[in-house]
View 1 (spheres, rainbow, N blue to C red):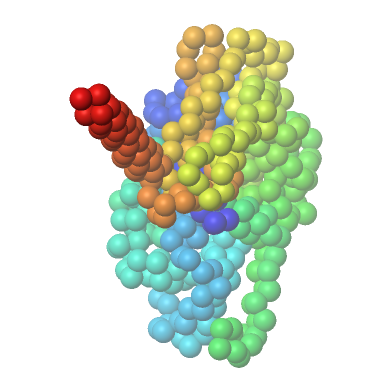
View 2 (cartoon, one colour):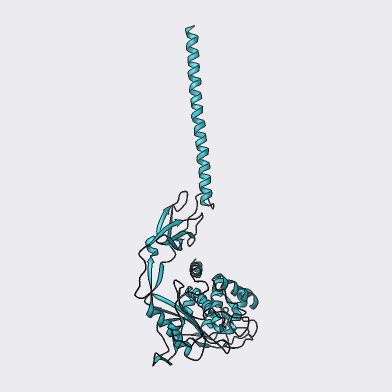
Length: 434
C-alpha cells in the first residue's frame, strides 16, 4: 500500500505540471547564467519560475538515470530481489565494474546507479525490468509521455551518446519532479557515499569491496566556486539531490532539488561547462527562493471527513484530500481571498484504503481552478459481499419493493378475508331470520 501511495502521489504530481509552451514568471534577461538550456520550477505546483530555451532539444547524459531509477522502483515489486550478473558487462563510461557471478539486490544496484552513476547497473536493471534494453527504452518513452514530457525520446537507460536519445531541460525537470516524489529516490540521491563490502552469500556476492562517493558536488565537495563575486563553498546545505551528467556532446548537466522555507524547487541546467554548472544551478536556486514563496490556500486537514455508508461492514468512509492546494507567488504579493472548496464524493464499493473516492473542487470566485482527489483512509466493503454500492442499492430497492408488494398482498388478502367473514355472518343472520 505504501508503494501504491508513492506512485499515486507521483501521478498527481504529473497532472499538475504545465504543458508546453512553458509559462514562466521570469524572462531570460532577469537571470545571468552561462547554461544555454535551463529551467527552475516549484516542486509542489509544477509552476515554471524561470526558463531559458527550456523546450530546445538537448542530450541528457546521465541525468537519464533518474528516470531509469524511478521506473525500476515503479515496476519491481520487491527491491530486495537479488540479481546475478550472468555475463561481464560491456558498457563504456562510469561503472560499478560488475563481474560475472556477482550478486546485488535491486536496491543496491539503484544505489550504484544514482550515487556513482554506474552505466553497467543501468543496463542490468533495465534488462531485469523489461528483458531487453530496447523494451525498457520503450517503457521509458511511454512513461515520459504520460507525465507530459512531450519532447523526449530515450534510446537507452544510462544516457550514453545516441542521436535518438534526447530531451529538453523542461522535460527533465518534470521527470526529476516526479522521481523526487518517491521516498527511496530522495534517500539515495541525498546519500553522500556508500560501501559495498566483499561478501559471499546467496543474496550478496561481491568479489571486491567498492566505495562510491556521490558525484553531486553540492553534497560532497570541499571545492570552492566564484559566486556573486566571492569564493563560496560548492557544498550547499539546502540541496538534497538529485543527479549529475556529462558527455562531450551533452556538456555538464545537473538536476538539483533544494528546500528552504517549506518550499522545494527543482532546477535543470544543461550543456554547461566545468564548475559553471554549479554556479548556474545555485543562481537559479537562490533566484527562486529570493523572489517566490508558496502559500497554502486550502489545507487538506480542513476537509478530512467521514460519511455513513449503508449496507457496509465498516459503516463509515473516512476520506481526505490527497494534498494541500498551494500557490507559488511573487514575494510582496498574496493570493485572492475568494477561494472556496466543494467536496464531491464519487465511488463504488468495495473501496480499498488509498482509492480515489471523489474530488475536492477548488474555486477562485466562480472559476474552477483545481480538482484534488479525495482519498479513502479505510477499507469499505458491502455486507452483501464484493458487489458495488450501486448494486447494493439496486438489490436493496428490489428487496424493499418485494417486501412492499408482499405487504400490499397481505393487506388486500386481509381485506378480502374480512369481507368474506362479514358476508358469511350476514348470510347466517338472514337464514335465522327466515
